[in-house]
Amino acid sequence: MNEHQLIQVCLQEIEKKLPWGDSNTWTNQEFSRLSDIIFDKTSISLSVSSLRRLYGKSTDYKKVYNPQLETKNAISRFLGYCDWHDFCRTKSNKPGSKYRYATRFCLALGILLVAFLGYRQLHKKIDSPTSFHVPDSVYFTGMHLFSNTIPNTVVIHYHISGYHEPLYIDWDDVLADRSAPPVKTLLEKDSGSITHTYFTKDIYNIRLVDAQNREIKKLQSAIFTNGWECYAIQNALHLIIDSGHFRQDTFMYASEDFLRTKGVDFNKPYRLFYRNICDHSITGQEFRMNVDFKPEFRDSYVECAHFQTEIIGSLGGILLTFMKTGCSGEVEAIYLGDLIIDGRSNDLSEFTISNNTWHSLHINIHADSSVLELDQNVIYSGRSPSPIGNIIGIRFEFLGNGRIRNFNIREDL
Image 1 (spheres, rainbow, N blue to C red):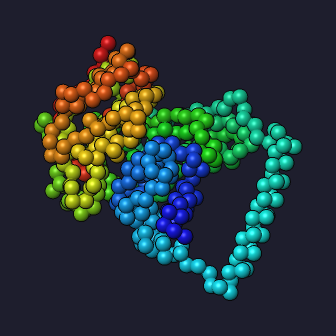
Image 2 (image 1 turned 120 degrees about the vertical axis):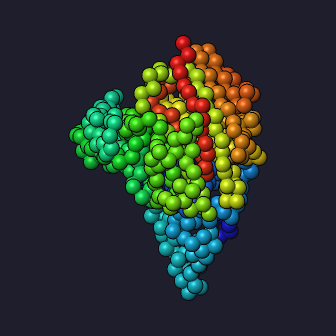
Image 3 (image 1 turned 90 degrees about the horizontal axis):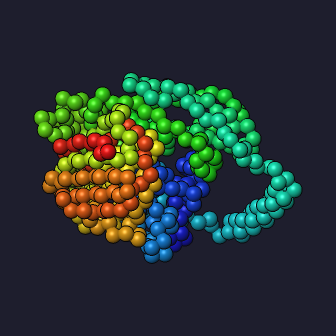
């Protein structure tokens, strides 16, 4: 096999490892989760856009995408190999000549068997048009979805009678050591109740999905924070930082000296988050948000670092990504509710930031227009998205360290 074929084998093995179905049906949500999982397991940050290119989702890129060695090392290590060369050596071992004809015979026999079974299955579907039935309605509701304390156990009641395909609940959760894909549960009965316990304060989208990960119903759950929280993630380390160690008089900052005493390895990438999950008493239809941020990336190990700001509503959200100067090609899209402004057909070069510099971000959402300003420069203006519902969460993320100050959000009616 040549290198391109080996990359495809590697991607197929990743697809089989994950419980999300055919990669052709993956959305940005799946690629974003995959990026997080690879980072947690390998400490290598692969952007969503890079993963989409690998899986052939970015049609504007050259047909045969040959990623950098670090990217190939990351996807190999995710599968348990030492690095890309180890994966290639393992997969390139060919059977000896005395087995070659037997192998070819078995392969040909297997192809004939698959073809025969496919023919049988095709006629079975033709003869039995009701073998797959989608009901007109599905009952999917929950209790204890919102809580002020952890852990919190939610209760989901469901009725899916009429579905002849397996259905799952995607809990939008990961195990405590963050070493496995998000938790999914197969529903083995047509109706009933099922529980799940969350141990981390966050906002969760609980989805009823089929085997292809197509969403059928969705519920939102949240465990509220007591004001602002700060936490860092590096591999299995999930460090919650006490407010006394990141809240300053005028800004939020978790010092590297403190993070080092808690086990953060500054020779490897890590992510730092600030978040406030609560009812902000804002409808999300017309509002404005202002915040100053200062990224403090370590250029020695982060090639294209980013800062993200996210406003989470009960019906949708806003997600903005700002990349380090020179990396605007890695800004795949900005998300304003139901509006997706992608980097293929829009110039997102103004969504770049300088390191170790304070930046001011202003988000103005009105009934008829939206305006985004960075350092007093308009970087986007256009129509407003559909209302995102009541705002229940604000989150800032740095790939590396960073500071926040002068945050405020208010309804603008």
